[in-house]
Length: 353
Picture 1: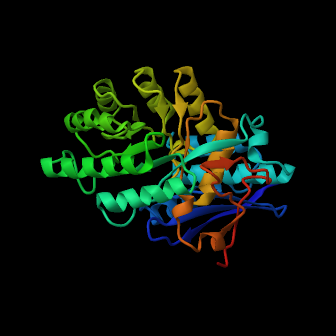
Picture 2: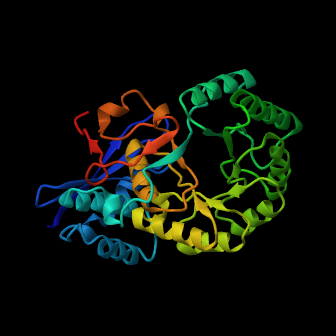
Picture 3: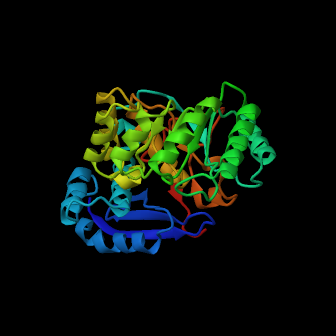
């Protein structure tokens, strides 16, 4: 079996464009991966075009060979294009053997994984608006939800902003009760001093974690904040290399990290990072802010990873046409996602749609 072509399909989306990677073979099997990344669409499409000639003509089942050739050809640089190609090759291998990807990775250690809702809090930026939306999340069966209450604040919170954020977090806590996990996202925005101040009063609301309070590839800054706040500090979605995670974990200031498989090189690299976490008695909550295809990728990884804390999921809060574009993906049931049993990644892309 040989790769005959690699191409991208961009699906316009109000929040961020989804970029799908399609790997075609001379035996008629096609693999799907994802390379979505923030607001950068055309640079990623160009990445795919630039590197595809390095994989065309190779056997897609030799996944490590292809990945390492792309890695070394790019001067040891991990890209979303590489990750998307890697995922698509795993999809082809699973389809060729008629088994889920996790079977190829040694078989599953769990039948389902708890997920947390994200993307639920669009609408009125008021305590009443957030409380109502949070209740709706819990009514769907979720036992954990994440949100960014900080608005447009950057570096520091003013006194008025602090009171506003506290009112939003407090309203959500009151709405969902004491048993639901509340995860606070800061999107890398604060100074060390401000992050420490915020992290201390967040403890009053019994939050489960404070995510990326400072620039999350600045490991010394992360460590400083984590040492000086009573809530769990997590990071990882901006990190790309194994040594980034090793440095953060070696400081022993957190027991959860959240790598982004698209930034780290795909499925197998994500499993390696989870093993690094396990060596430091830490768990993993993979970042996942893309399409339901990416959710299914995350499930393949979670299936074989013993130290999973929880899994992020936006799928209940996407555009209503999503199921017209992607078919086969699984939906959250009572706050959990079951492990898929379809061959490969289990998702098909309707290109006509």
